[in-house]
View 1 (cartoon, rainbow, N blue to C red):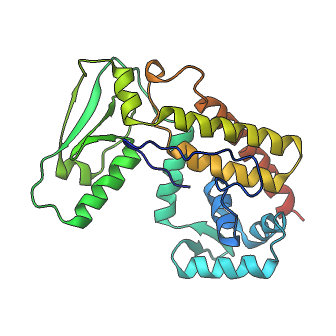
View 2: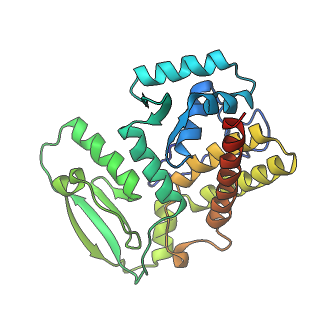
Length: 265
């Protein structure tokens, strides 16, 4: 459930309305387990509940259990003494990013932008890659090589990789900030796909198709990770971010009910 950011935008073009849409990834046993746990709080469930979620997609119990074993071996899951499976630390960080994308911590925006300029010398390729990943998590966009910025409306901690490689300051552009935001992020593209996902979620709910709802919800959560979370003043009219979050919240509540029912079987 990943996203991208930056000058080229965060959207993938298309309409996720058909079962063979390239925007909706086919769900394997592994992705079903992972999506279920990433969307569950706390992120731990007994094997029988995960098996029964797999049954919604016609995946055999043995296939789900093999996936669980492989995910434990790969370090994605930890098997607890009571037989339940839980996300490991790396995936807990991913869940935290997803939670922030669904309920971002914001503050009043007064026109300032946060800016990070790379000032460290002789950086290794691994350090450059780590910085780029950190900037994506922080939702900063790259104006030019080594210069990252965004409106100063989010509340979050900066990891050491950022403070070690960059000089940080705040400022305000002299030109139109909305035009700058539109140049840094593909806002129209993000909105287009978000509206398509909202429509797909509504269609799956109307058809009472839980497997389809699960698939659309996984795509919605990936897309929310790519939301630049800009102040309202910088967004196009009728921005669909809140609508997409509402659809995912409704799905998550229904998934919890399904898990409770299936765990009791």
